[in-house]
Amino acid sequence: MINIPSTIEDPAYRYKMPRMELKQESRLNGVKTNIFNLSDVAEALRVPDDFIIKYMCAELGVGKEKKSIIKGSHPYEIMVEVLDSFITKFILCPKCNLPEISLFAEKKILKGGCRACGKVSKLDNAHKISNHIIRNIPKDMSEIDVKIRVGDEDDKSTTSKKSKKGKKGKKKKKDKDLEESKEDEKEELDDEEEKLTIESTEVAETIESISDIFTEKGDDMSIDDKKDEIRNQCVSIAAERDLKYYIALNSILCKIQPEGEDQKAKNVYMNTILLTFQKSASIFTSMIEEDGEEGTKCFIMAMVNFFITQRPDLDIAIAGFCKIAYDSNIISEEVFLAWADKKFKTDKKSSVYDKKAEKKFRKAAQKFLTWLQEAEEDEGEESEEEEEENEELTEEQKKAKKMEQLIKEEKLKQEQALAESKAKADEEEKQQEEEGQKIDLMADKADVPEEDDFDIDDI
Ligand SMILES: [Zn+2]
Image (tube, rainbow, N blue to C red):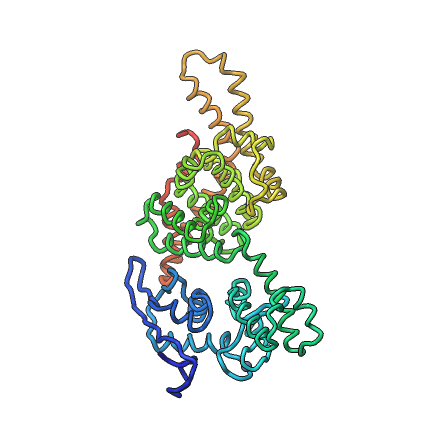
């Protein structure tokens, strides 16, 4: 056992924690550091395990891998130094320096009430993890506090809210502060205990974690591997179906950002989004095979959220995106048309749902929906006249022609932009070899035959 914090040298010091047991582990995607006895350390500090792990990640600038594992190889000396700084910030009372702080939030500000000296202090609210702490203050902390305060007055009834309020007048100022904030804290906790939403930190972290894995492993991962990764990570945070689709779509696309402000860069950005989605589309096809219509709803909500809420600059890519979703059997013609007519409804109760955004998306997808609609009408009008040829093929060909006309302009623009950026990339390659990665991306893109992306003849 070592002292809390480890910098205190007195062997007789009464506050002790276990020494961290670290193991460096080498895995497919790099070296990790595992804190084997994280739970014991966290218990000694009376905080949840993830406060420590998240703090470590924030301080060391690395990602979290699993519950007790962080990315990278970190020696004990560094880890214990970081742990001590965590203790100083969130465990020790700033006044008496004893690890007797009880965390609570008051008007979204993280504070600590000292069980030893009674001082209420504002803690480091600027730290990256302070919001996470506020949202996840353990319940038993308030129980410990209630016991302490009740113990002082030897009055068990103070545990009920009503009698607590009745006693307030007699209490010292500091106790009163602590108690009021305790109630705020409880309310916040109740809110946080509700289901995960797209706002939840866990959801954002899961997207980050999956997209890191996809980026690191790249094409070494099969579609099934990717699907499994998404599913496993969603299960581990108990994400429901709507969030699973949201997480999946964002994990695949979130790392793609425009490389510049000019039209060329925007076209490359848009094309990268569409190509990346096209490459991974079968993940969704397969998910929807399992989930049925509910899955389609979730996909539509995720798609609307991505384009309208997150990337409004990509509205020009919406028609192309819908086309890929249609070609990949993610959304059928029937569903698309019913959804355009508001007859196929998404899930109002979901946190991914956004009525206004959906309306905007419909508008932006109009080109595609009109094409689909007209092709549908043509089918009705002309199918009787068809004589020799395979009907289905002919209809599909007609659809193809219409869609082709509609997107021809955009396609030409994109091809031009790609050719230009390829030329630019070649130029840059000579000048800046350190930017290899960026160039690779562009080169990759240029290798993909353009005809495959938007060509409808192969439906
Ligand atoms: Zn104190």
